[in-house]
Image 1: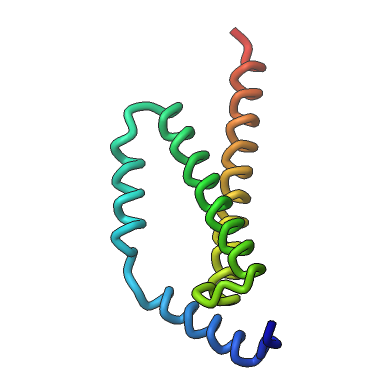
Image 2: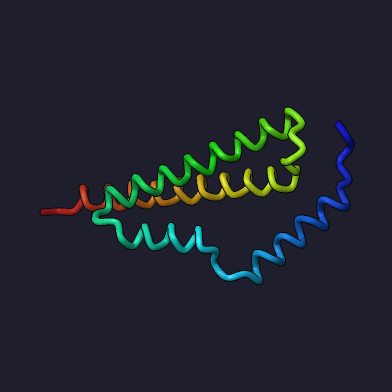
Length: 112
């Protein structure tokens, strides 16, 4: 396994971040947002969100394993970005869950 050039990696990450800021939403993201808007009920919306988080985490795990095996098509920067996406989506889902639990507790404790 060849050593990782940290300066090059940092430059790549900064370049990707700059590209991400400059680009409008990708069609994939737009399609997911449309799918969320079309959800018929809250339970379906929540289930779709959990599935999306799970997909991100599975994709991250697959990329990590491929990189560890030495797959030449998988770059470290891509693995790191996917791992961050998975982490952020999980954290966001956790925050949503926490807010839902708080709201549920408030409703339950309301006087009749």
